[in-house]
Length: 589
Image (cartoon, rainbow, N blue to C red; front, top):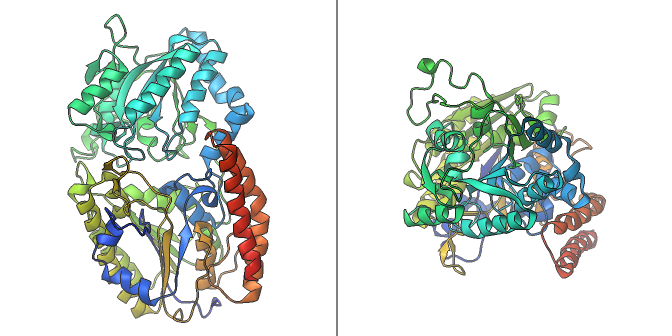
């Protein structure tokens, strides 16, 4: 089916159930265990399909799980977006990484001032916010430039969210091995990402990280291994390790970040790097505290030390960023939002705090400023230490506001993200994740009749998997990371009863589908394919576009394998999978 602009339903709405994957294994599967009559009714009676949300189909190396940033970039762009992680991987492989001007400037700053280089970021192989290969490469870079010993201080942020809850010791051992091999570096701090990588303006958490980095406040430990061991003994998993300053052999704290030093923040994903960067770089951060947010969970703090440093991030974390960055933005033009705006149509983006950047900045291809005709609604996420304590999060308020927007008939396109299915999924608490899924389904229960009342269309999808696997039965530990599972895609609304959604789709195909429903011409730069099956000509077009994309995807598969230590057989298998998918498309016509 397709629509003309005059006959198009209004609104066309996209609901993104964040972290809602599909798995046949029902054990610890919140999606399978939840009571979700509204989603189930759609799935059983409406046009549906599944989408690939991981690996090369979203611009990541083969087999790498998707995430919210990657998912929203692909959905909004309507094409496969090669990710920063893959591009940085390739720069390491080609050697360009070691000649990067930003890294060179940081080292030159240190050598000129006789100071230290501080490397900080997420110590993880989860490949969501940072890559183990990148920070190990930074140590090699320092060695090449003549910085040895404690002239380089590493501040390790432990993961336990996109990795197993107690995997930090293994990552630390590999980091220490690289330090021994290169003769570069010492570990100065160990801090859980809960404190160092907040994104919800919970400044008291960030304060703990900042004051450890600059003043040595918090716990102390004789070495980094002991820091993690002591945290485990306190009952903390990697994500929640309280800020710990590490001592040297003389019993004194390893050097803190001081005037004249250089800091490189190695995270490549922006949303959880912004706040800590802001504390370091914003001269007005603690100005006018009397007029600041009165909420004790969100209020800013008075910095005891504000070191004058050269600060650089791996990528650009914000359009307003004054600090240097090593790899520049690659805005995706002619994405869904821009195309809808150019067509003279209106759109709404709505989410709670935890996913607001995803439906705005990331969905718009790295553009902060709203398009003409675009409005945004932000609902605050709840003030709780962990979201399993309030598993519905702010879904009821989000639903209330979006239903009002639907009934207002003001918008042609509405983009909504339900955060709790992902955020609670990260806790590994099955019962809470079930409640999170049920909260999303309750929201659908209000949205569906509203869409029906105004004659609109509703497309329900997910951006990656998570809450369908809350326990790792191999390692016998809670599973807190994303998955590579397929995600749902189901269509409801006026004129869709006899529609068919084709198989073999990916997230990049969502935007073309929405444009088809709206009767808006798909731009040439948007290389995804509508999921609406319309007979032989459409299938031929899909096969042709898949042929065009195959070369890029094969290149990405090989480039990604260089730093992922894939065997030759694994690379061949990945290439074979892509070729088989193309052959299937050819047979379809």
